[in-house]
Image (cartoon, rainbow over all chains, first blue to last red; front, side, top):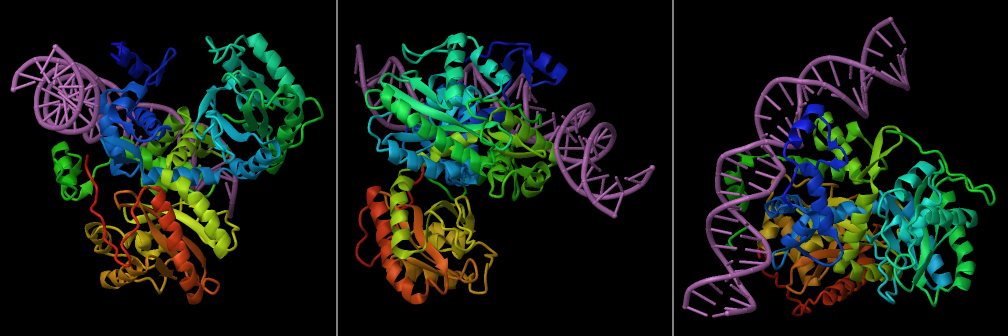
Length: 288
Length: 288
DNA sequence: CAACCGCATTCCATTTGACGGAACGTAGGT
DNA sequence: ACCTACGTTCCGTCAAATGGAATGCGGTTG
């Protein structure tokens, strides 16, 4: 990680801007957040060097940030010179998750789906071009399908991701699909924009998206988008199972159930039920 | 190198010039964490000015941090110029909470307590001199007792706090109890170190602590500490109810149940069952 | 036993980005 | 049109972040 760009500082300061070209300049706070995220990653306590590698930061930098966080209760030194998430971070995490209205509504819906389909049910939200799993129904960690809370997959390789894409405004979909180098997780993963748009169109038509072993071999999933009162996508929920259990016939049966569950949650958020058959991507809200 | 915790901060900071006299100097990262915490606080989306007031930071500072966080997906602009926790923070939160072995074990135990006692059950950890609630059994938000995840109370005013204190090493207990100006939340709150030590002694003897309307009027709670394999306190769990429902007689009945639940969780963490009656506070583990 | 490696930690000169008072733009209320 | 409250931008000052190099530690190898 020898930072290359030498005179970058001049350019940056000249315009007083935080990004140059397509490369983003990282301030201390940005780096701290990287460290924080690496810290909370699945896989038990983490070593300093490991975090440094993951984040691409220098070891002293990571060390200093970890110490700062430890002083603030965001990190906690564990044995063997490792660090884990601290109590203050956990409190914050609990509060944040508790605040989410969508999640609150989704929880019982997930349990219901789990019970009625026999498959693992998940709720996920979007960050950039990835789907982030926030909650899964009591796992019965049958086979290690990586759907644990915190897990991230590219939008185009997983059911919940495709579900979200299927209800996003075209501009945003374009930003994701037209990015160069969409990687394939399996031999089945569609990576061509055209192919993906076809998949999305079908998902929009049906009201649920199907991941046919796009993300992992022998794993299928079915998911539907969750919308808020303004029609924006706030997340997606679905089920996920081994391909020979969650076979095409099951998909046909469970798809509508997943769709109904997602609509129930959406309705709880004040969303209007969509006109039948037709999905109209809502306008993108805001601008601060 | 082991030495310690005593004047560690002074030594470290004096050299680093991070603190002057009695006042602690806060770096940008520290401030960012304050902002982050204020952001995730209960009470829906927060306004910039509100966060600035809560954290004592200047408005431009908060604004800059919020923008940085928004760029990183840690914050998310909501309507009306407010901000809420962003998807990346939620993912991190979900992962962090999912990682906690203690929490994983505590969850079913809480549900069980809830069902058998009819009262709200909570699991909490310690941060500095406060107890932080991480999880509560499906609330049945009967009366708005503030035990929602993320809620914080001083250790000496709540059941879980007292439970943790009752099993902490004397040095740490002293650091909390001998601090000047322990505030009383109700007329019943003990604030004198001597009185508190008596309460703790009784709690240690029984194996569970009782909060007799110390934290809020008409609210009682019963809690017991959760220990890890090295005998250190990792948290506490208990029940919490209105005083005239959770009356002294009930306390006598439920106390042992709470104690048993906490011991089950402790055992799951590898803790040795305590010698009967006698509680021996373990050595504080410390530095690598 | 010494040489070696990987790791966490400390040091320090360099410079980058954080800071916050003041100014600006914009509602919303009287 | 006046005022207050808020979010936002500007910019000169200066404190804090940075990372290469050095140190110390524990384990593995020749």
